[in-house]
Amino acid sequence: MLKKKTYEKLKKICIDESEETVVFGEGNLDAKIVLIGEAPGSKEIELRKPFVGQAGKNLNEFLKVVELEREDIYITNVVKIRPYRINKETGRKVNRPPNKNEIEKYSKILFQELEIIRPRLIVTLGNVPLKTLTSQKNIKVGEVHGNIIETKEYTIFPLYHPAAIIYNRNLKDIYFEDLIKLKKHIKK
Ligand code: URA
Image (cartoon, rainbow, N blue to C red):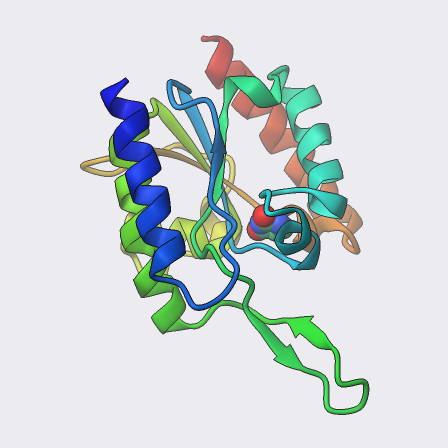
């Protein structure tokens, strides 16, 4: 109960202190596995839920291969608002990578989320959560994907970001090999 209260308090602080729409993490607060993405996109902002739309389809594929249910895990992002710029020609918002300030501000919240949930394993998607959790500026998912990283606080399983594999057949194969490795690790 205290856990839930602490969690709700953190969520409220995050929403109150953000000038833009927040997509907070969601899922099982007792989860052994936490999945961390980069930042919400337009669909996530619309529904105020992480990993919906195309990203949600990727997530479902992930869960199926790894043999987990969405209810088993906790899903969140490093940055809780949508980083965007305006396309000068169309006047529309387009996604951009989160900047240093956004990562710094919201990673403080992320660390508190993890402190509440205390998962056994953290699966990072892409470079942003990997760099944030390892505090290693130069670490690259291309060099460490599919291999467990132990830090003082966390056990991390780095994966490519699903968006990175869409147009790259080779990466797609590697991503699926990594998922099988992850499944074996979880079942151990
Ligand atoms: N949607 C999210 O919530 N996070 C991502 O990293 C990508 C899409």
